[in-house]
Image 1 (tube, one colour):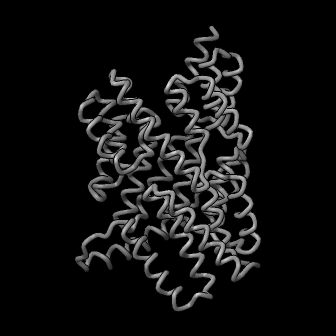
Image 2 (spheres, rainbow, N blue to C red):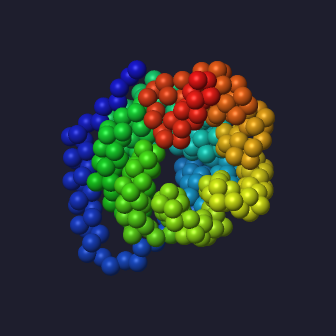
Image 3 (tube, rainbow, N blue to C red):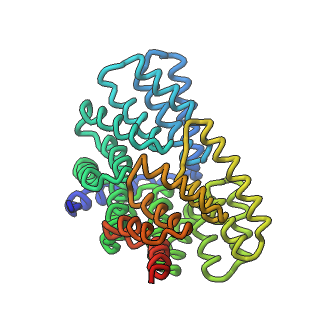
Length: 387
């Protein structure tokens, strides 16, 4: 196993730079603009520029990457096709050595869960732009999902060496979490928070710290981070999801359900958690309705070139369709052998009564040291069935 090293000196330099930036901003009273609005303003500006300069390959690459980020932020998959069109336009204008468009195409492939293609684009971009941190962000995301731990470690390390910013610290924290190094994960993410220069960045880092606590079943600590994030970004869907699941864990079911109802109307990716809570409280018909909505969303994603058999497997397991859960998990396993898919395989096999096989996949899920609470619950259930 290869180890990740975060250079403290570099972090100190960033913290100093951020302090100066924050000091400059504090003298100007400006109404905060949401990240989505900023992204849309950037898209409008790029489109106006490209109307004047249609041969600007860099402008098309930036537009495509902005669409990818809009899709991620708004969960609107229709931006994927727009992103692809802009990035392909950039590649046509500059077919060789267009690292900027290659990075964008890699990020788009990651967003669509085509991690093998994302790896290919990142590898091509690496040849052209070997000292660009964003290349290694795309590569690290793809390799992590493909189950290439050594490759992902190297990519995250290179990203930290080149540009130790929030994007790098977040990936480092995720890497540490997957290896069971919870203290190191919190430390890396705290360094990201210390370098945050905007309310959006603060909210993002607080959410990630909340997730680290949540995954370790430190409910109250998770709540502290989610609420801190909501102070700076009160409408952030991820943070509102954090609040809702904390309320559910605290037994405040009515408040949690109300939060989920409002949240999922805007952000359907949180429907599985909402449906599980509805089912757990005996409202199975309503849970079924939510799953039907999710199925429509999945079809929309597929129509835009995205698919996620992993989530579909988990949903099928929740609905008691054990055969489909296993079929979908097996389909995903043929594409990527990551710890995430290993856990889905283990759970689906267990639900189908194949406990010995399930344990072999559960072993794979925790092989790196991952101690996610849900993964351990699955593992305990499998071990209990074997005993």
